[in-house]
Image 1: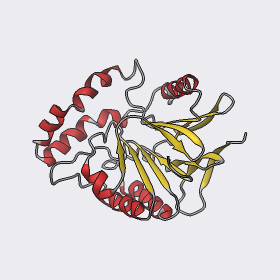
Image 2 (image 1 turned 90 degrees about the horizontal axis):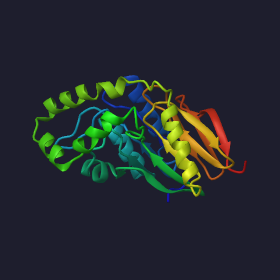
Image 3 (image 1 turned 90 degrees about the vertical axis):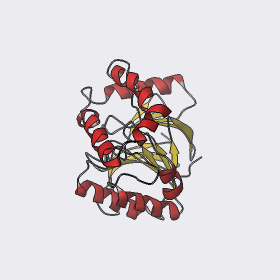
Image 4 (image 1 turned 45 degrees about the vertical axis):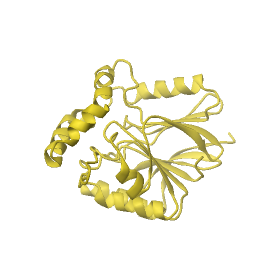
Length: 254
């Protein structure tokens, strides 16, 4: 169980995000340090993340330090692996202190029953090629072979191969994941909220009488995030100050 208020962010893609985007996220993390009990990173914080025995990617170091400070302040950090950063390990878990989780997460956030999932590989038609290569990319054999490569060369290789998925703009405007989210909620009436990332399309909407579909959007494109409290779920835009910009809110009582 995670306590509220809980924030959810996704798809920052550190490594290709420019300095302005990265600094804005660091400012956001500094602003919430010591102020919220839980943060969920819903995948693709990094455009590429891999842990060799003694080496990690250089880009994103300042953000890792900010996350460690946030964790030291008492905030629980749940990190859901995305398709770009699904090779996390001891550095994230032990040195930064996050709970690194591969696959969907279901649990309670305050009084809400929530399912959080990055969303890659879920669309049957659009993701069919990725569905073939994903088990190979995540297999122990492939990871072991990749670890034998020099980190500089391996990073260039990974960054080049990820370009297509990073620059791809969802042609359906996020409708594919939206339909999957709605279907998930309809099939699991005990769920209150389904949260996805991956599409880079921010969303917050009620499904039926009481359920909620949400997507935090992409911090790479705009600094949006979700805040869950005991009484509401809100889509917000960070503007560099304590005065957040509310884009939409759904009250639990309604």
